Image 1 (tube, rainbow, N blue to C red):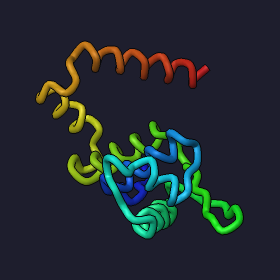
Image 2: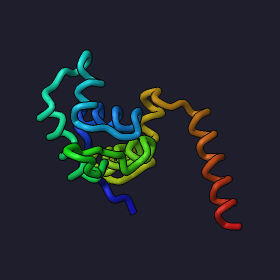
Image 3: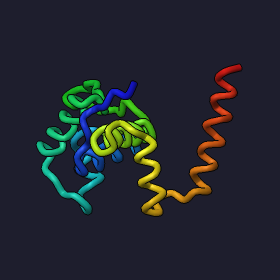
Length: 129
């Protein structure tokens, strides 16, 4: 069963991407990494990191005076969670509705959908053996 985490804001996602790229980060290193694209005060970075931790996307360890944050999930797992949220919120929990909408709006073509169906069938066959 799908268990949705609270969705990420755009800025939370950007900070999480910094952590993934660096493996770990402090509030100071987040500010440094984002200074040209999204300048922010260190207190803002700490707030975002704390929110990410509350939502379960990161955890921290203390090194001296600093909290060092590490991701708790891989990017593809976070993406799958986001899609699960979309399916739940907009498609009444129906993956079929989502996929049909994606085909109807040329997000995914029928060939890609067929390849996915074949991969799913192979996985089911493998899991059954």
